[in-house]
Image (spheres, rainbow, N blue to C red):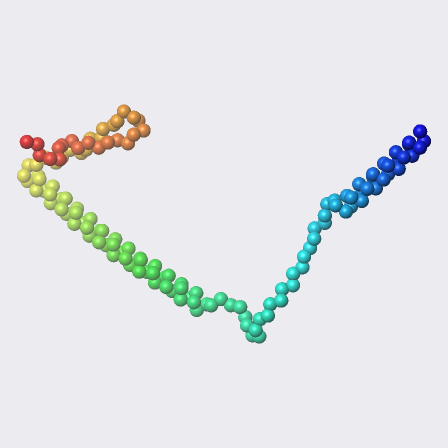
Length: 133
């Protein structure tokens, strides 16, 4: 019995030593650090700079394009204002002519709702667009 117990103790100690050795060898690794030493040769007197003249030219070109666009928008706005004034004058003139001839102004369009509440309203013309015979 003593021999069996001694063998068991030796086997247990051997197992513990094997596990400890394996854990030390294959266990958690430490973080490895790498050092990089770049060797770049630069000519004497060279200083890396941004080409400022090129940037200034690009900015001036963008400003010129912006000014052109602003001028075009101002021109379009003036044209639209003049068209609006002409249309307002024509509307007044037509209203005077219709009043002088006794023509009744057309009623506003009637909005007809469909059966579905989420459907957009449909505009119906209250008078026919083509003359009826």
